[in-house]
Image 1: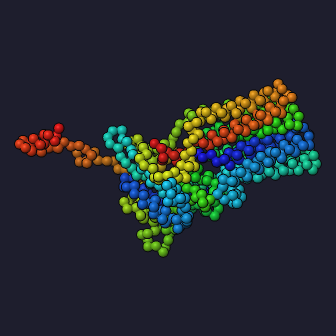
Image 2 (image 1 turned 90 degrees about the vertical axis):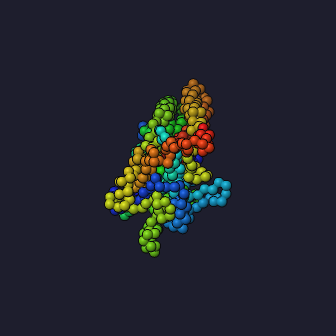
Length: 246
Length: 311
């Protein structure tokens, strides 16, 4: 059913730390690697080796430059995937029941066998989390790696979404955001984790941690403290210092 | 938003079909329609053909048309599903009306009730169609309160244009109906102008700052896109041709969908002998007009996901 559950037992999701992300795209690539043989296999590419390659990806890393009102600008890498919203608009618009939100863990999924490929769910999602597979004729999306996080054939430390396992900078964290005592919830609380597009009222489960405030002042590598005279006694070195200082 | 031709054809053709069917059902109750055997049959069959052609074409853009029946199951939450259910329901009284006319040549009694049910079903279906769009918060242009009103008015306007033309074809003149058609066209034109004004003045709540949540630090600009070529999102949601030419296209819609048909219908009062040719001309120009109007409705609407791609 495409009715949303009143409450989910857990709220599994991601916490993405924008202070740490280095924009290496490893999460996107490992997501593709795992999922192209997983629940939504294949993650089709059309003309993957041509001049204009396109294909289905569940994870995209944007890069933004923020210009402060005063001072230097800052670069922020911004990975974006499905936020597994509590009020997921993509689920309720589905006419067939292919889209659903699981009551046990809050993960939003598509049942490909029921999907008619009308694309309406991708229109309803404000975040662009869903991508249509034109060769399969169905909608595909992030599954939070349900075939990995519950997989008892894997060692326990590997039971995390592919994007989290692979992140070399530890910018992505996975856990139960419905449990206030979980590591991810504590992280959100202490760092001021926030929702994307709060005005859309989708209540995303995934949270983003803002970049930390940059240190300004004499210890900052960007501040230009005046350097001492190289050779206050004059002479050849004093002359050289004077010439180079002009 | 990318305007799929199958959806444009669906909403315009079935819109006119439902408008025509609703008018036939309502006018039948008041006994306003001539009891000409072929006129009534052709009018009913034409309305059902327009509806059916539209519904069929809407399945063409599906990835799995053979599973289309599944779309009737989620009417409790989905407007698309409700539209399908309402469309199927409307067929029942409409077909009973057709059969009643063919077999018994009757439009009274139970067939009046069927006409009323067909009219209600038509309005409900068109309303559900409009709500598919109007319920999408991610596309602010479609959430304007005038969207469902316009869908209903355009359906009645196009349906009444077809009805007046059909009556002229059978040399049956119903002056009141031509006047009604004229009035609906004029009202719809002002509603559409009002919609465009509202659209132009609509504040944008979602922008790159709220989308990234980084606006508290400073002005956010796109530094690098996440992929080198256009992806599904940009192709589907980032349609830009119309916004560039919106002003011109709106004028073309005003002229072809409203002003020219209004002039042609008005002239048909003055030159009743040429009424059929004039109404045909009105239908022809309105067909072009409503197609551009619907194309523009899609193409002009901006999806908030584009905030991630544009500074």
